Length: 272
Image: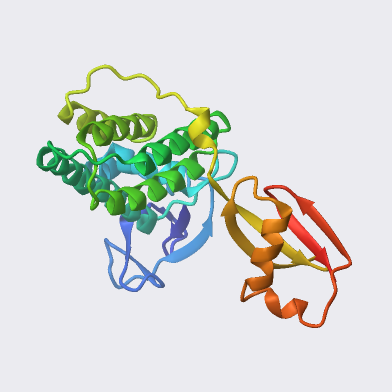
């Protein structure tokens, strides 16, 4: 955290200073006295650049604090404390809370909906795989990014018809994935779904295989485009797509193909 000193060179805590524009800081006990802003250093009692966890938890909740600390930086690096970052984490937890009630409402309304939603099940399975892998690697900040992706996905999917059983089953799995990071939120939401037994969800390896893949198109060794194609597509089919593609067809005008290097499901390099 930043360090602060008054004119007498006495350390001041962040709670003892204030700023109206984020540039100049003043002493709360003497509002006319400008404070000297020092470098950002590791929190220590002697420099008074510590944050009182009790007041932060009282204002934002323990889950928001956990979320901010984990999202700000990998564990091997220092965390730069930021009030704006703390507020952002708090707002995200509130968004998740609003989303939770939207899902609960959808479960009630769609009690007789028979729509099957394989997209939700597949996304949840991939999320389980990502979060599990990132937990094992201590990539906590990446897991938070996974949760932001999950939020954006669920906001869109919950507007579509979804079979009640599929929605409940997958949402419970998602809430369990949140448990190590924001446990109070996770447990509260699970209790609203009358879920008492919590066990880490397992990954279906079959559902991890994407039906479509991104294939890199190179011409003379330079990347010219990325095609979204079906998995295990043949070289001949790829060539046909490239020749009619708006981004690549211009390169083949009055040119002859000398050589093709094709790596299935990864890239194609055409030498002209």
